[in-house]
Length: 291
Image 1 (cartoon, rainbow, N blue to C red):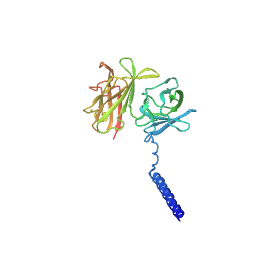
Image 2 (image 1 turned 90 degrees about the vertical axis):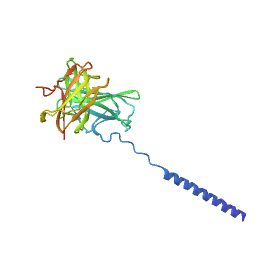
Image 3 (image 1 turned 60 degrees about the vertical axis):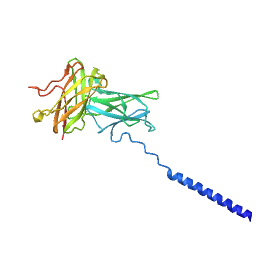
């Protein structure tokens, strides 16, 4: 009798232990959370061109999927052939315009990571002319991953913008410059942040950012009596990046010509004219239209 009771007691203990174990497993299963999906670092961007070599693929993106004359923000990712994004690449890009009689490069900024990303790189590039059937732009990527050097090249199509957002000119100091507007991209009535980049050309393939100059602006509406607007602020540049920032005021929508005067650090006029008397436009300017 005692043996039967002992067996029953042991059975109950085993059953309760199994129940507790199953309950514990069930609880752990319920608390498991799914892994978050990988972040899409190029969300909102549109693929422009894909480049390949035997080790990697580079996908080049822009905000609208196009490359145009003037300033362009470009974004790119480097993927190994198994699809892994490369997070620690050191990259240089050489843009080259192959013309029928010569070749030349164009201004390009330093390369950095896109904010908030780990494997998406970005740069600013100023194309000075559009592609055509006989002449084309080529981008060469020279990059290093884990101490190993690689390169790849490929053609890109650069379209002509309808309005002038950049200018290439010879300064009064006998130096050739390139200036390009980077902001506003979506102008509005009222005061807008205005930004530009300024480079000097050392040779056909080398452009250096220019700091410490001043870009004075005089926005006008040629179709509306060439009137200007108040409360504009000259663009001031930092010492090293070639990036300039100021304010431009658009009092109404329509076509605007932003006349420029560029002065060096000693206030010498490098290029541009004041709008007065018979002078209706500076020799260097930007254009934009908005509704």
